[in-house]
Length: 131
Image (cartoon, rainbow, N blue to C red; front, side, top):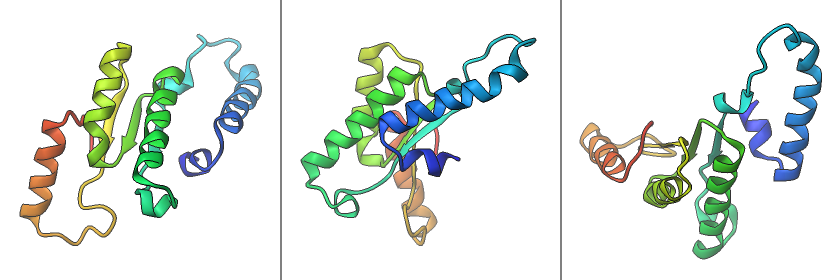
C-alpha cells in the first residue's frame, strides 16, 4: 500500500485517507478512535537524475515530503542518506516526533561490508533513526 500511496499527489493521498477513514469508521465505532497515520511511513528515495529534476528542484521535493510527513503526523520519513541532516533540522524546528529512516548501499546493495558500515555510521551521525 505504501508504494501505491507514494506515487499519488498530496491531494490524492489526503482523499485516500479520508476514504479509508469512512470505510473503517463502522468497524471502529465501538473502539477507541485511533490515528492510523501514526503508523505510516512516507518515502522519497529518488535521486535528482531518477526524478528528472535538477538537484535544487529535487531538494524542494524532499523538503516538501518531509513537511508533509510532519504535518500529517506520520511515524517516519524514509529518504536518501544525503538528506538525513536536512530532515532532522526540519523535524527539530517543527518539534515533531517524526523519525528519519534512510537506505544503505542503495539501490544496488553490492558494496562490501566495510562500505556499508561506513555509510551506516555516517547516517547515524547525521541523525538517522532507522535503516
